[in-house]
Amino acid sequence: MGPVMPPSKKPEASGISVASASLSHLYQASSLQEAEELDLAFPAPLALPLAPLTDGAAKPEKGTSTPGMEDEELTNLNWLHESKNLLNSFGDPVLRSVSPVGGEGGVVGNRGDRDHDNMPPSPIAGGDLPYDADRNPNCKPPYSFSCLIFMAIEDAPSKRLPVKEIYTWILEHFSYFANAPTGWKNSVRHNLSLNKCFKKVDKDRSQSIGKGSLWCIDPEYRQNLIQALKKTPYHPHAQVFSTPPTSPQAYQSMSSPPLWPGSPFFRRNGGVLLQGTVTQTLILYRIFSLPPLFHVPSSPLTPLVHQGELKPPSFHVSHSPQSCRSGDVDSFAYAL
DNA sequence: CACTCACTAAACATCC
DNA sequence: TGGATGTTTAGTGAGT
Image (cartoon, rainbow, N blue to C red; front, side):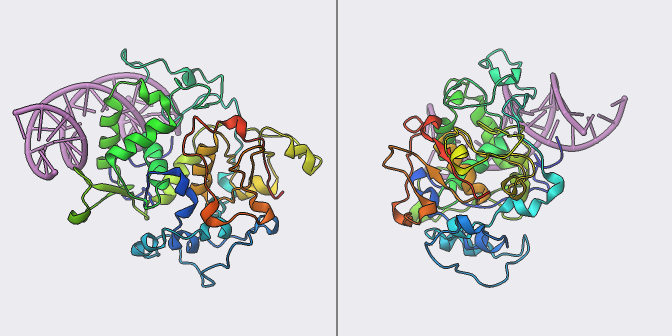
């Protein structure tokens, strides 16, 4: 494990900001900073006819954006169609394949956290199966606490969350923690305090929601968190095909996204395949600024983005991961 | 073997 | 006053 995630507030970390409570707002949250900080071509088939790019200007290099800016752009959806693929900036050296049986893994499950008597068994440690929060609710997520916090905050429209809502988010998305001893909450707080990726935001007293502060991602360290996520040994339902699907119909019928080393999608996204529950996928898509192209047949939520039918305000996805399981995602369409 | 990282536990202080 | 939150320290285990 590389020094990607400084446990103590070290200067090498990275972070963005913001968080929210409802996944229904997942795509409402967009930061202008995020839109600007990457200059990545949007594949033509993925371009969304939703709105013009807000910024024709050159984007600043990482770390040069103005932190105050993003929070004022919380309701726009530019990130959706601007699709600044963060992973592009990682470059080929970081490309790697992901395997559904990627074995071990996890950032969390493979560490010294499994040997505590009071901790539930962590099947993921066995490394035989890919992690699926829905199918294996007792599996410890293959994400470090830093990544979990990152995803929680990133999932919030405001990109800010109190610690309590971070707990809630983790519980909602990783039921493993529902049965875990409460020590994990201590770990979350410990991580928030110690990890420089996370910054405490002073709350407006008039809008106080109770005890504690809001936490956000330090934009300076966001890349580190993304790197850490990328280094998660595998992602839910990841599949790597040795050869490309021969036709669009071929991958339309797949239960998993088509991905093979060398494909444009693979290269664009640093070899990280993101699929799992709809919720998880959207979160990761959100984090990586990937264009969400979903077919969810027989679902009123089907966002046919690629057909230009998606209207920003109407693009809502089930808030409940339980009600929208991975099996609901029949296929993903990528521009290959 | 040294170092780093991630995690856990615990103590303590502060705030509501 | 109790619980939640935040900080800090210590220790462990695994990976590099």
